[in-house]
Length: 271
Ligand code: PEP
Ligand code: MN
Image (tube, rainbow, N blue to C red; front, side, top):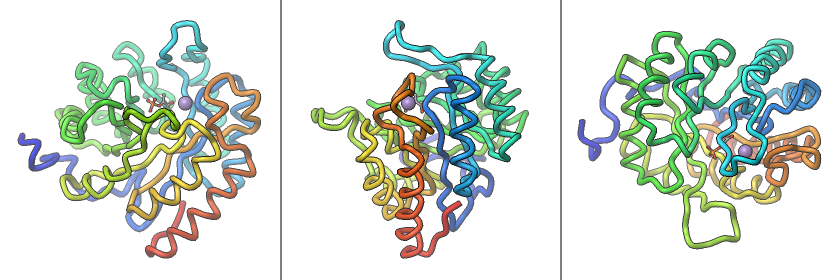
């Protein structure tokens, strides 16, 4: 396969799963599943707003080995239970070939994080599971990866057969330190030119500060993104992970309001 031609084969089609044509799909939820109460209180807020996908990490790939590492399988149990109770489809990260099947037992959508974009053994394993078990996969861009490397990484997910792959731009490393990363919104039109894969934006990890999430969400929608994945928490001040970039209930409501306005200008709906 030739990276210059973008992703080739089976994944290269219009999809109608997690991503729906003509819609901006919103995925919201906490960085990590901390306990049942935290996940349920946040689920209540999200489902009341009509959002249909909830995120939450059970296996957390932390930069520091001393930070909270996630509840692992106990977290997955909470994810599934609360997801079903509030009729929310669930998105969670797979960090290792060893836990990939377990994650697929509990979650609707599998996420590959930025730190694992080039973990080819993991990509192959997740691709195999996603194909067999009909799961969509969100592939985050490595924070120091070229777009062509990202597209080639997506090919690993399709080696076994057709998989719904959704690219996610979540910020890359540049010299500026005012934001956690630099959100490369140019990736949206570039991906449109090179590939038929859908692309969503994660403004939370890119910006690292909650007050910067809404403006970049508006910009992402205007640039043509297919969706947003944002961190939201019923009480960000108490969050064990990434509270500073998590939207509180009022802010997530405001985000939806503003995103709907931008979406209507370009003839899209928000779901
Ligand atoms: C996440 O979405 O929970 C996460 C860890 O993001 P990233 O891989 O983009 O850092
Ligand atoms: Mn996070």
